[in-house]
Image (cartoon, rainbow, N blue to C red; front, side, top):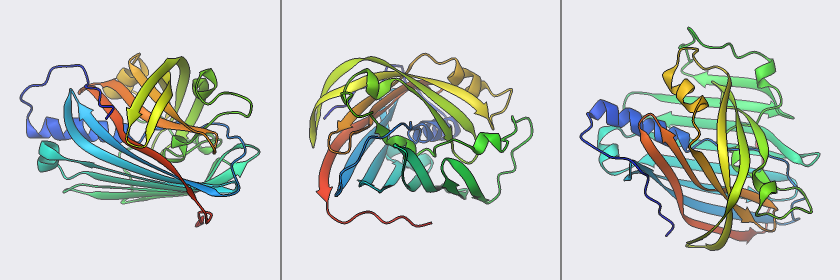
Length: 293
C-alpha cells in the first residue's frame, strides 16, 4: 500500500473546525486536470481506483473512482465520504459524474453532475457542455453567496473542463506516458461556481506499488490560478494562489494513452493533506459506455 503520511502536527480541534477542515480536504480531492488525448482503442477499458484521504497524518476519508474509456466516449464516476472521527462530526458525502467524448484529439465533456450532502444541506450541480462551452447550468438550491465575488462571465464558461473529466490526462502520440509530456500543461476548469486554472510542470519520476499497479508515476508540481467566482478578500483563495506546496503523481493507463491522478499532496490552511491511491487497476471492458445528454 502506497500510504504517505502528511507532515504537520495535530491537536485538539473543535468539532466545527474539524468539520470545516475535512470538507476542504475532501473537496480538494475532486480537483483534477484536463489535457489533449491520443487515439483510444476500439474496445473500452475500465479503470478502478480507490484513495485514502488524510489530514495532518490522520485518516479522514475515502474516495473511489471508476472510468470507462473507448475510442468515442468516456464516463467517469467519483464518490468520496468522510470516515472515522470526521464522519461522527459531519456525514459529508460527495458524488461526481461526467460523460463526454473526444474532439480533434482533446477531451470534450458533454455532461457533468455533482451532489454534496451533509446533515445540514444537499446541493446538486448539473452542467451540459458542447465543445468545452457550458450550454446549461443548474444549481439546486440556488447558490446565493455572490457578494464580493469576481463575476463569472460567459467567457469564463468557454474552453473549459469540468472537475471529474479533468481526472483523465492524455499524452500526445509518440510521447512516453511517464515523463515531461504527462505533466507539462495548463488546465482550465469550471465547477459551476468558480473558474480556475491548474498549471502542471514536470518534477521527476517515482516508483510505486499498490494493489493492481506496480511501476513508475510522473511527479508534477501544481499551481492554482483563480480566474473567476472567488471572493476578492478570500484568505483561502489567496493562500492557494500563493501555494508552492501542491504536488500530483500521475499513473499511466497504457492502452488508452492517458494518465490519471495516483496521489495528490497539498498544503492547506488546515494543514498538510494527502489523497493517496490504495488500489489502481485497469481491465478490458467490451461494450462502449453510454453517454446521456
